[in-house]
Length: 326
Image 1 (cartoon, rainbow, N blue to C red):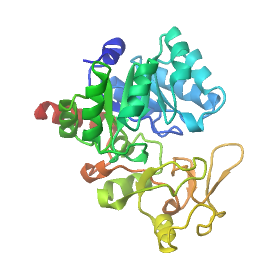
Image 2: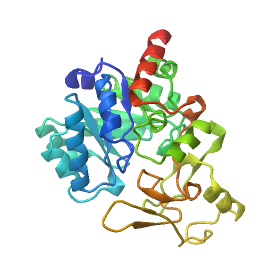
Image 3: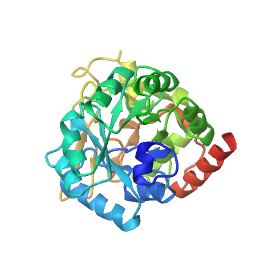
């Protein structure tokens, strides 16, 4: 058991990825934590008021430990302070240098995990004093810093970091996948796409259905959906927006088809929020529009996802498969 799991009394080597804008909300994450994994709230892109709402709901649903994922390029004023004030047990920081936050987090008893794209970044994070690292493989869905397949980067990172916990992310869908990754030296896995296809994931149902129906060949690695987060690679499902851009010769940002069109809105606030074509925002539960024009983040693990289930059922199945595989 890793030092993180001992500290937080987490029994299973299973984390859900903190899918941002509240996709990984309290219902999903509390179910992971209640099953004795580590639920990680996806609060990247949310303001402090929305963050507190999710944190309050999480604590109503479980007394077990959990984490919060913050996306550094999308950081809003007050996000870090909210995590500190709320004394969240663990923070995952993605796509940036975590060093400025480590000392203040540790003063408050908060663990810091850096999500990294390669061994070099993981070593820098370890030297800065993080409590663990998440390393991505290129198989991952969503925003991807990785440059190598998961098995390669896990082996190399474990060899470099020694006893520091290494959590693996990318292309993991089953208990057998988890067992194989743990054999490489990982302390745990972080799974996004598998938990996206759950009842509790806060995206529109048509998006979940597309994930279940897709195979890895239906995913593409691109920088197309960059409005709101420029020059950041991501893996998404191929859809009409991608096909139209490809048919136009894959032009650069600024020259793409219908670039300034509105493709939908986010409802539920005081006023609908219009979303531009090529927005970074996926079809979350409040989206009103055509999902064929949106970024549908999805990893290659969709090959082995065949149904939308409750998070509790997913955890039960993963544990059963893991016990069989080890």
